Amino acid sequence: MSKILIVEDDKTLLDALKYNISKEGYEAVTAVDGVQALETARAEKPDLIILDIMLPKLDGFEVCRILRKETTVPILMLTAKVEEIDKVVGLEIGADDYMTKPFSLRELLARVRAMLRRTEMMRQEALSEEEAVPPALKVGDLRIDFARHQVSLGDSILNLSPKEFELLAFLVRNRGRAFSRDYLLDKVWGYDYAIDTHTVNVHIRWLRQKIEADPAHPQRLLTVRGVGYKFEG
Image 1: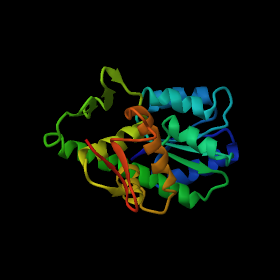
Image 2 (image 1 turned 120 degrees about the vertical axis):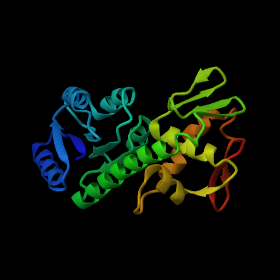
Image 3 (image 1 turned 30 degrees about the horizontal axis):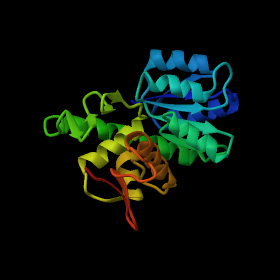
């Protein structure tokens, strides 16, 4: 049984989420503020976290930043704000998905299932490919350490979010091949329903800022017109 931590200070919404999550067969644990969220996440070690942004004591952005230094647990952020900057900030600090209130419980549960399914698939793939995939790949001065989940450029270790690492690792493993945004969403995010492909564009832009000498004229992460993206090197 997967364990899901729900962090929400609105009692009505918290109770509704807990009821529906439990009804789906998951174990639901809760927290009502940012400090309690960190304590519960560390003690319960959930398989997924549903995290509201507007929280007492410590907001969801800060909770996400702290958790990302400690764990790769999937995080689905909730917010009442609709501005694009909020979405970008949420993804940049390591959230795996983002929903704006009010939202459909049916869609939220679909995303939860997709995120948990993707996590399990990654675990199985890691086990089956452990011997086939080299522990690390080096392309010029760029080194991807799969065992440590770490990327370095020259002598510097890059600070990548989990999704940035997964996207880069996938493209490097398949370097020279071009993939559409929809395909990358399916392979890296694991969504089996329509979602904004702008998410891929944003992560590609952040990766270029970190691994390209001139992000405006990339030499590694290339855009293939009419197709999507590929890694050359």
